[in-house]
Length: 176
Image (cartoon, rainbow, N blue to C red; front, side, top):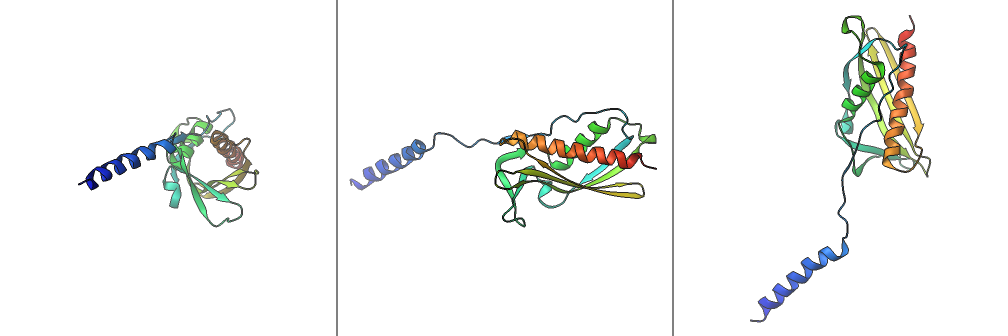
């Protein structure tokens, strides 16, 4: 007869105990790339397509520990605001500016790598792109140090890496 009372008391104590130890619920954080700086003297391009494969189809921010470079991991509670192919495509189009499609080179982009490399406080982002324009193929690999420890610093480093790649691409497209 007293057994149901004890079970009820035990259930109340367990439920109450669950809330005592946890003072903060994990919160999701979403990041975008910094604004692309448009400028003069840039090639006339349109971004025809941006493609990815594997884990880059998701909004998860990815990283690799230098000690185990073959294992790609994802951050929990830290995500891109959109999938990388959309972020990169929008960044590229903003960087090059709007062009008349009739006079612009159509670029097809493939994102090979878009991840953070964590190495004993020497963190850096890796951006690796393949770009096709008509009959030409370009490959760009950029590693940019992360200045700071916040995830916003990581997003800024991705923007800086893309900016470096786009300067190289612009130069390549300007060659006859």
